[in-house]
Length: 269
Image 1 (tube, rainbow, N blue to C red):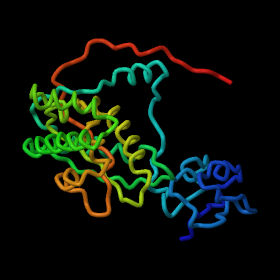
Image 2 (image 1 turned 60 degrees about the vertical axis):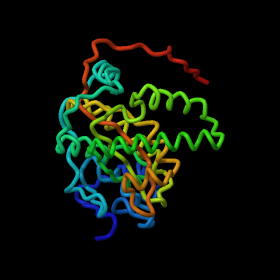
Image 3 (image 1 turned 90 degrees about the horizontal axis):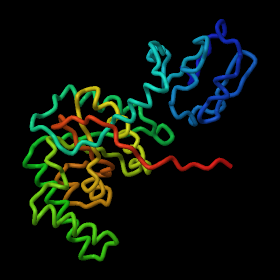
């Protein structure tokens, strides 16, 4: 099969697929849309998904694998309220989330936006409490090394270490029952931003599964910096980068109110 297959009995030559092609590799011919060069396709599936008559098929994103959009849409008010209810959870019950819940949580991440539809994220889920403690200790050592090296964040790291070591409070891993690490191939230069989008989807979806999440910022920063002891401890494969870390568990407490944020600051020009 060529990249694009057109059912000419259905195609009305409306030009929508050409207008919405992310890579600008389609043009309208006498019999319908034509592909100018196949290698430019980013496999986004837009051309097939947007065709109003179902006339197109793409070998990378087959029509048979695309589900129709059905069901009620949230109102603007419902969506606004849902988004406001998301909270960063830092207090967890000791019970481990079920594996099928985590699979479902990460499955929705596949649909998060990625630069150039690069996708390419993979995940390592760690639920061994002893290993999570080792991870937090390793990050603490990294902070000490950063302080010694004169890091611009040294004052901040000193405060974190005071809490972690002197007060013996786990401000690094928050005693989360589970850590999820995202990694991507080194050649994927947008791995970090892709992970950020994936975490946004996961954090919004998690409450529907009864889960709480927050980005493990200290661990994630250490990993993105390429600190080898952490990469070895997590088991990041060779030729890959650690690009994100998410804490996951069942929330220990329930929120009853919606905190306000700073007023919107926007300027139209």
